[in-house]
Amino acid sequence: MDMRPIQTVGQRQSLVVNTQLQQAICMLQMSNLELQSYLDEQAAENPFLEVAPPQPEGQAPPSQAPSRGAAEDAFDYIQMRAEARPASLYAHLRGQFDLIFDDPRDRAAAEIFLEALEPSGWLGEDLAQVAARAGVPAEGAEDFLARLQQVEPAGLFARDLAECLRLQAEDRRCLTEPFARLLENLPLVAKADIAALCRVCRCDEAELRRQLALLRCLDPKPGAHFDAEEHGARPPDLIARRDGDGWTLDLNRSTLPAVHVDAGRAPRADGCAETRAYVGARLSDARWMRRAVEHRNRTTLAVGAEIVRRQGAFLEQGPSAIRPMTLRDVAEAVGVHESTVSRVTTGMMIDTPQGAFPLKAFFTTALSGAAAGTEDRSAAAVRHQIRDLVREEDPRKPLSDDAIARMVSADGVALARRTVAKYREALGIPSSFQRRRAARLAGN
Image (cartoon, rainbow, N blue to C red):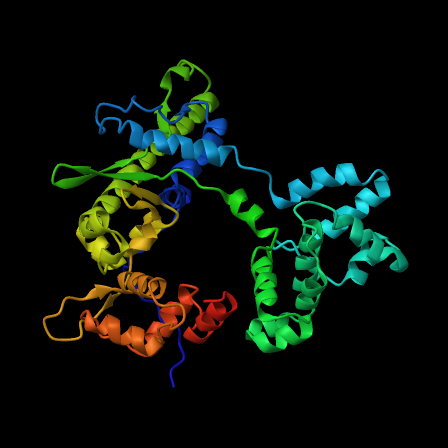
């Protein structure tokens, strides 16, 4: 065998991802607010790059659609709410710790316990372990935890569901003997065993129903709503509105920054070579950044406009009319790569007459019609139909997955029972057995 090295000459094409290309790709994925933050950072390092703040309503540039008046004023309100978000769960508790703990050592120990708190509001570690880490003696751990459990809302720092609910019942002054026994037998509540619950609670069914109604009024995760408030709503990046017989799409100028190049700041050309080189490089960077932002905006509008064109039925009728659509469909129509469409739609929000939605929500697979010539429907539309069917069912006779599959298939979509089960679970809808059990507990 001849093992001598051989040299060959050939040509090949490759794409070199330099720093500017990486920046351009990143900007395609940014929301308007993220773009503002990113450009502010760039302007801080480049004296020739100026970033104008988002334009107030009614001052859109001549090349753009006019202000939408009251419709876009709503987005200013959303932005105001997003900027004035309430404190997080942890900030909320730290403020209460300042009032509960006078001793700096106790205050420091409370911070250790706070680190072990889960977003639900429950204590996420064994009490003995947290107490040891916080320097609280084992014999005083229960008492220290009881002090932490004085915070509001009631139920925080509980170690399990029963304790969480008991703390809330004590706070409401409704911890009766039957209710205490009910909390001690939550597994029977999960099974909806009414007869057994009446025995252990030592009450008749009418009294048990009252105790169950009180149980449903309590919050099993008292810390969870703080996380929801912390994230808050944010204004959309695109706005779709009816325009005669069609639809118009525009960037939300109330959140979109503008980039300007201030070449007037450049020193005179008779400066030293090093200065001229620096000025030239920074001016070049600033001009490139302006072009990159313009390209990002044009691409975003092109992709968004194609989505609006394809989803006109959704804009008119709502989620039940959403059409099948893939990244490739939009990419081929706009003339860009699928990856570009994926980047543009990542994190972007669009406001429509049906509400605000992530652009990604409009991409959904097609489900074939049950018969030849039957129009395909999107998986999202079918999921919406399943949700409506469950919402309208008789709670005493909930629809099985088989029944739902037959009802959807009767509308022209061939749907298997296992597909219904998969969609139902994705929607967070319990099984028919679980829904029937919940109806029994509610007294329906």
